[in-house]
Length: 212
Image 1: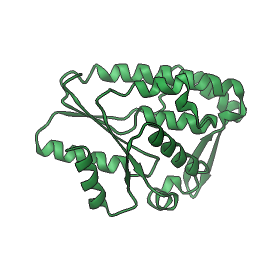
Image 2 (image 1 turned 180 degrees about the horizontal axis):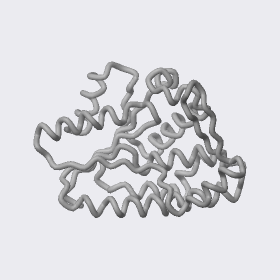
Image 3 (image 1 turned 90 degrees about the horizontal axis):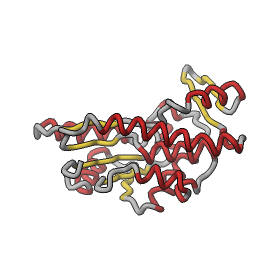
Image 4 (image 1 turned 60 degrees about the horizontal axis):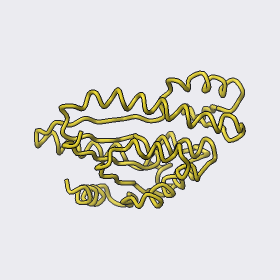
């Protein structure tokens, strides 16, 4: 994988990740480049029984507003679940990523849409452990990202996200999710791009930052 180019656009739901990944894909297609779009976020393999337990015990809750289903995890209410869930999620993510890597042998460009930082941010919110990135399990997630990956974090204010993405309108944890990404980007000294601006301006900055 040493000769491959890894590009990762991350940020909270509604920040525009998929839109700009699509722009990167369009350019690669025009240039006839070989690429792979990777989407891995909070996979459920070994953690499935625990998720069922949380649903039964009310640690996972759902509500429907205006036809949109919202779910939230309150794993922080259980010390045991808050400890076990990150471990199982890491195992699940490791398995999923290992399977995906087998498909990348002949791929020149790898575009990460949702990946390790997105799952880590989710776990930080679900367990209410905003310092999880400093713990062994948080660092383990970060190490899953290939060393030569160029990472862009999209920053969008809360009101803009709620207007852009319908399924975030009544998300009780949205503010915390935005904060989690800010914490991660600051701690890892990642490039942050303000996506409260016109699409083409943001696209230009992303492409220039990635030297694309």
